[in-house]
Image (cartoon, rainbow, N blue to C red; front, side, top):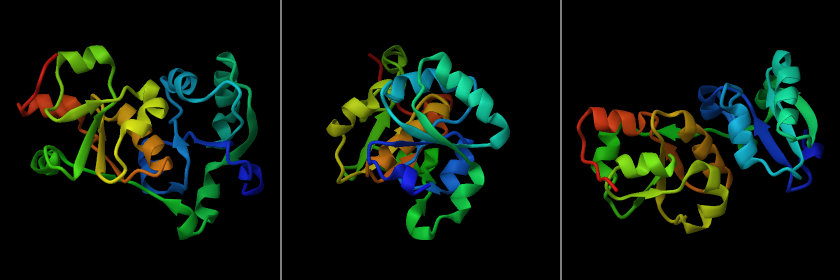
Amino acid sequence: MERLLEDENTILLDTRKASEFAEKHVLGALNLPYNKAFTNWAGWLVSYDAKYVVIGEVELFQEIQESLESIHLDGAIAYVPAEIVEQYSADETTGYSFITMEELEKVYAGEDYYVVDIRKATEWRDGHLPHAHHHMLGDLYESAGEIPKDKKVVVHCQSGTRSAIGTSLLQGLGFDVVNYAGGYAEWEREQKPVERG
């Protein structure tokens, strides 16, 4: 697979479950779990002229290919079984960590942290964490330059699905990032401070 990725513009598209990706993945991979939202986020985040290598479950490759081609993403240069990840050395793989609500509550206003809310604008206006910054997932590649690289970045969405994608994206761009998978839903349910508008 190394030969396939010699071009630095080639995207490594990992379609495994977010939990598997978080545990271990090839450096620089973008996690787009193959689920009902797959084509939506592929359309947002994968350029139509991009070349990409797909990692996933072999039995799903045909469905994944058809899903990508249904939105005119036809730049796949290879489909690689998920087991390939285990063949990479520790220096070539990584994972990412999670932060709990209790941990986040202690640090979200701190100078060393930058909280990224990747939900839609309407969701943000309806309520968000104080001190958070809005960077909608679909625009995250474009707005990543506004995020400081000298801070620990905490990514969250409503309930953890989109934040897994956002965490993988920012990690691939070199950010020190953790995923708050409980999301705004948990934060609001537990009656933590929120701002609106």
